[in-house]
Length: 363
Image 1 (cartoon, rainbow, N blue to C red):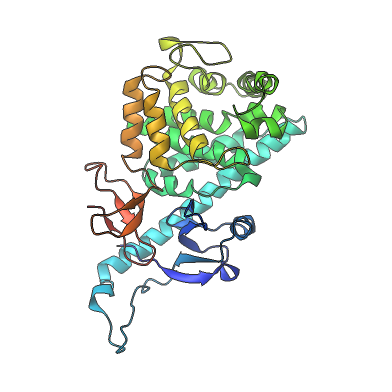
Image 2 (spheres, one colour; image 1 turned 120 degrees about the vertical axis):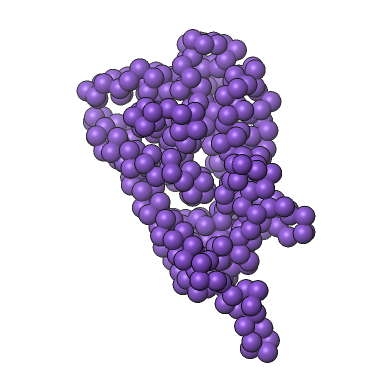
């Protein structure tokens, strides 16, 4: 069991704390359960969105020992020795995951900044940080799916790149790719949008919600990405290059920049297409409100057999679960909670976290 639910004022929120969940005044999910606060920008973003208080996960392993009005402990809320150890272990895993996640963000930010200034980026550091990320993602994808909720408009392109790397790594693992290929696929995910750095920010923030002229410029970013990585002096596997150059190609031939169709598109590029679209749909930008995970998955399913091969969409859905991590659901008991882990043997019963109670299987 994992304990959460101590409410504090936003002014008391500090780096290193874990928020249980955060909603704005319109009940829109901003951060999902167990999000690590890693920088002041996250706190400032919450402030700008009108959030005045949050529930946090206590750093104390004995958290959850609440008292009744007669000062006697409520045995139902007392954590067992086993749950204390489980909670402490989860906390340590989450802290480590946060560090690895930040390292990956730093590597892609430094790389894109170098390209923007006309220099070659340090591909070795991108590969190293991706290898560290992959090593842990394949062991516990749900933990990193939770960290994907850390988003801000200020670092949108970097966090999107890391999120796609996380999901493509987990996807490749679920499809039984070899460890070496999983790393190369994740590197492709990390670099899939590096070509956007050659475009004005206003265009790539809009993505495909732009004018016809802007969209014609936007469609060039996969080719720009290939030029950037090819000019860096490090030879990437063809399936990694396919991710960068073809993640906007579609099964029916309606994609870009080449208009490939069917099996002419490498499976890794289609995998990245799915993870890219899912993260874009669930992200909030000045031009896009973002949708809940279930809605994003439903919209992707509507494109099966048309834009994406159905077997791959079904595999992706199994990876994310019927209720993906970050989904806000109502239990049969009437209680509400956020999905923090997928029960892949029983997709209808994910593990949910309640802001003020222990996590439990949905039923």
